[in-house]
Amino acid sequence: MATYNGSRFVQEQIDSIIMQLEPDDELVIVDDCSIDNTVEIINAIKCKNIIFFQNEANIGYVKTFEKAFSLSKNNIICLTDQDDIWIKGRLELLYQTLKKENVLVVASNFEIKNEFQNNVNFLRLKNYESNDFLGNIKRIFLGRSAYYGCTMILDRNVFRYILPFPEYTEAHDLWIAMTANILKSIFHLNENTLVYRVHQNNSSLKKRKLIQKLIARYYFCKNILIILKRINKKFI
Image 1 (spheres, rainbow, N blue to C red):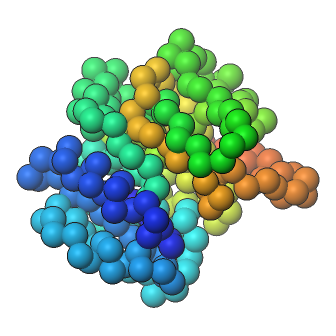
Image 2: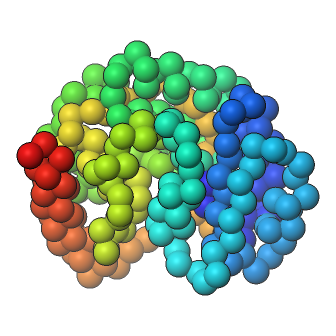
């Protein structure tokens, strides 16, 4: 979990996670220099599963997730945001699906909890598109994919390909999804496994300027070459 000024929701999110953890599970939380009382809330939670780290400088959520990956020790990694709510049974469902499908990444869908009056529509993953690897990559490129890090569970073996993140990585979840599709090792789970909060601070809802979109597309193509080089090195 990466946190930053998440005091409004982080307690409820952590509570929904803790109740699903086994004794050997770990909840790695990295705070990116919050200026509210997020750190105080986390420090007040008495749970032996929690491993808490505070960045010395604000490095952004992408690099903060990369730091969290480096601090984790278990073989199965479940990503989470600070402001959602895990649905009961989520962790077990994702874990069993990862084992059954024998893939490196499983991504699911989610319910929406909207604090605004306007409708917010999200694309949904479709199970039958799990093996449409080229189509999935195309949808990521066009900004029409339904991959969100908070819905993902990873086999640690994927770290060999995704870490370190490239110098320019717009979103860690799209980088992971793109890598898994190139490796042909991803599964789409139709079920909702969490409640996704829609509020004014959602980074995934912020509009980008045209120039930002063009830059992102350029680095998308560049990062594909990085993945292919890493894959080639692993199999030589």
